[in-house]
Length: 220
Image (cartoon, rainbow, N blue to C red; front, side, top):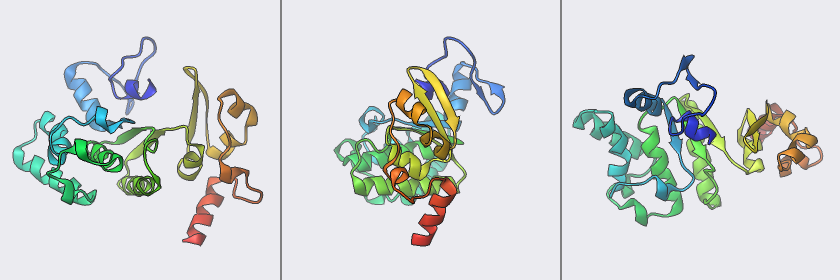
């Protein structure tokens, strides 16, 4: 619900939504502008994919923006190469593996050059290999200074990846803090039906993000 409000799909029944310091409007033009800046990748790729080829799926949003065919072709080819999808460009996306579909879904949003990317349970249906590929994509997006927001119940992934955690429970925001503070609050975790990450529980293991990153760098 939170993500759908951020993307303008849902309109809040109370309160307001702001982006870059300005109230969000709900005219067709305003929503199109918002969705170009705030992209969302849904949990189930099949619910997001509509085109008959990978290339067509990735370029779909660009057509809606009214770009010229030359610019659409250039941007699409660029993202296909960057995401390692060249060998799949002319394949029907519905016959791809779950991990490949996820890559296509991400590409179709990234090609719009958003400022913020919302991911709904992105690792839910991925095996270990495709989860690692997804994490690599997150690093690339970070290098391009694209803000990433992920909704997930995978606390181990949260501990490894996030530098800010918002805890929602039953429609209420319970906490907004750094991961080490969130996972150190056992009462909060119990209230939200969450658990501490496995690595966080290990004796002597880093308990702050800085210590965790230093350990990663040390281990290469």
